[in-house]
Structures are given as C-alpha cells and as structure tokens.
Image (cartoon, rainbow, N blue to C red; front, side, top):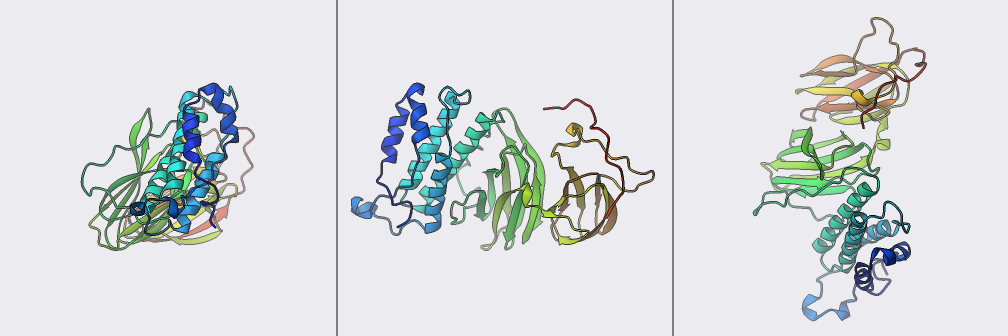
Length: 369
C-alpha cells in the first residue's frame, strides 16, 4: 500500500483547528504536526465521484514528498520569524497539502502541489529577509499560454507544449543563491526563455537566456535575483515540447584542461589564475564569461584581483559573432558561463595555469547589499 493511503482523512479537521487558533495556541501544534498524504477509499465516495483511475504512483510520491517538506518546518514559540505573514504562508502550505492528498484527479493534485510549493518559497523568503516573490497576473481568456504536459509534480521541474507564454516560479534547491537551469526542447517551433524578477517591491524583465528554433539542450546560469522564468513559444507543431529543471551550482561540471562541448553550458573552475583559449564554431553570436566564486557581481565583489604579468592577454569576458578564437582570464575559482545565440555551435577550451602569487589581502571597499 502506498504512503498516501496509510492514515484516515484527519488533515482537513486538523487544518480547521489550526485556522481557529490564535498565535498563542498555534506554536505547540506546529511543532508536533507531521502531515501524511491521505487518499479516501473508493467505497466511501459517491458513485458519481468515483475516479476513473488512481493517481499515478509518481504523483502520489510527489504529494508525500511535499508533506515531508511541510513537516520539516518548525517554529519556536515567540520566535522573531513566526510573524503573522509567515504563519499565513504556513497555513497556505497546509491547505495545499490537504487538497493534494485528497485529490482524485491528477490536475487537481498538481495544482495543489504548485500552490503549496509557492507558499513554501514565500515562507522561506519571509523568514530569511529576502524579497518576496509574487505570482504573475492570471492569463487572459483563451489559449494564450503553453499547455502543461502530463507530469508528476516533481519538484524543480516544469514542462509544457504548444504556443503561448507562461511564467514559472523558480524553486531553488539553495534559496537565495544562483543556480543552473537545464532546458530541453524537442520538435519544431520557436522557443524563448528569459528571467523575470517579480516581487512585492520590484517587477522587471531580466536577461534573455535562450532563443532557438527547433530542438535544444543546454544549461544556463540563473542569477540569484530572478524569481520567475518566462517561457514563450510560437509556430509550434504537435511535437514541440519543453522542460526546465533547476539544479544547484554544485551540479556544474568541472572545467578540464581540455574541454569540448556544444551550445550553452556552465562549467566550474576549481584552480587558481589561468588563461583559457576559447575556440568557437558557430553561425551566430556567442559569449563566454567568468563569474567569480564569491557569486557577487563585479561592482560588489570584494575579491582582490591577481597581479597579472605585464602584457598578459585576455579579459574576463569574450565574444564574437561567428567562428572565432579568444583568450579569457580566470583569476580564481569560479564559474565559466558559455552562451550561444542559437544553441547549435560547438566549442573547444584549453586551459593553461599562470604562476602568480596569491593576493596578500582582500580589497577594501564598501559592499552594496
């Protein structure tokens, strides 16, 4: 028997009890509550509501995993982070869990999981004093956004097909930190991906990550301030599908002394100062840039630059419009972000360490928060 059928349906009663409590009576219950997914036995349902089939096992597993996420949350009585706004998000997560575990149709379960994870993202942001993500405006009437695929509700994964525009809330494996987004596109059609910052204090379009026609596979660097991914598709055929997966920066492959690849990629540089020769074969524009291991942008970076020998070639970012060869400087451990306009080119990297003594002390300057 799956985990979703191990306990009777008491979650709705517990939720009603929680909602009726004041702050003073809520804290002890929060610490003890451990939600477990619940599915009503078919014989207890009216005949007209009997499901045609049970939820797929993968969806049931996603509901159970979400329940474990909620169960892992704990609040201390009188804690400074247990504010009314935080408790509101917690209640929203509980409500979403109850809806997901009682769902008899897959779309209902997936919608509840989406709502619940959004509540947990907002809750974590409030508890850690980060900007609070908000939902995009609801779509206008009509088929103006990609239809969701039949997925499993797996965390960090979004899928779609068809023409339109949609925004996906970013669920980061490491909240508040940059991440990687793995993208797969199959079939014929136009696919565009860009970042969006949509919070209570700021709404702004970020950077364009991908603009391709046809199939695509690659990884892109996802800055820490982005809250949503905006997906736009056009001229789609029936087989035009896409998926995105958010993974931590630690998933980036280590840069080898000789490294070959295709399209967009993010590599991890673990060594000291080095020069890297970049050879690109492409029919479109491309860029290779270095991101410091401190994960701050250059205006905010406190890392002292190495004393490059006089006439050392290269720069911190290189680009070209078609085929080309450029030299890039890698001052310290960090990340190499490779981007190409159409995602179809190939590249070859060769890295040569440079013998430079380490800086004696960090650069002293104000840091913007």
